[in-house]
Amino acid sequence: MLGRLGQLGRLGFDNLTDAVYRKLITGSPQDVEDLAKQLGLPLAQVQAALDQLEKLDLLRPQGEGLGLLVDPHLGLKTLLLRQIAGIEDRLKDFEEDRAAVLDLLDQFADRHPGGLGADEAYVTGQEAVTERLRELAGSAQTEWLAFIPGGGRTGSWLDAASALELQVRRRGVHSRTVYTDSIRGDARASRRAARCEKLGGPVRTVPSLPVHMFLVDRELALLPVDPDDPWRSVTQITAPGVLAALSALFESVWENAVALGTDTEADEHGLSPQERELLRLLSRGLTDEAVRRRLGVSLRTVRRVVADLSARLGAESRFEVGYRAAKRGWI
Image (cartoon, rainbow, N blue to C red):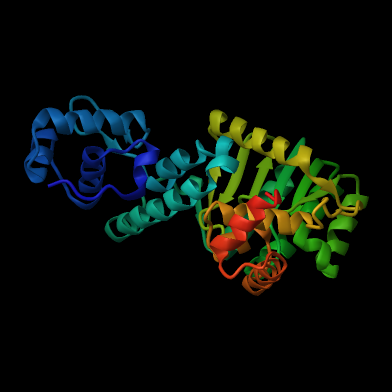
């Protein structure tokens, strides 16, 4: 009776917990005994799975009954965000987990189109997302921190995020923003970022960013559900533990970022920071699309840089690029 677990195992699911959770979403069991009967499983095993779902904050206890199902838009995203503290070492796992979670959310949306009442934690639609960002920019009191990957299909998001940054800084709120190095080659984006910096807040860049992110007064975080389509929907995070992890992630990235007015330099192998980061991401097995998103560049740019590195290394495949780069000590 148990289905294939897939990639949710890293989030705390086993095959039993996965089967019980999916039945809670897609079925309508009356009580624990009914749930066990529908699954064809022993009562004790089903109860153990329900206990695990409570530990994962996906099910709220309710007397002797099954409990209240937490909206997956909130609960599953929280499980993903617990991994962010180690995201630089586990990004490939995170990408796979996200895909598996989105698959579950699609199943949930089909059965529960109205959600489970967590509207304030999940904002959907470009107009609603834009309005929520404006509200936050107008209500921020002490600090505005942001990760803003640029380039590719995120252009409209980049323009809107920069406008919000200007709004915040004109109000005298302390802000720091990290862009990807890709904006250095975009005259319009670079000018806008420099304009923001002149209003009193530093701007830095890094070769790649894991996700779009806004942290407001360290009391609320806003992250897109789909990093490749940040306008579609965002998740609002207010859990103190998650906010602490996101704040630590921001500070770690900020510490290693380069000020916008400072030129980035090639290393001893003649590699730009962007080229070196691309090799590192490829060595982790990320697809061209995932690399594109993290670097904030177009897919064409990723493939052009890969082709150039292949020629410099005398490599004929992506695998050989990674092998030769590692052998030469480039990564």
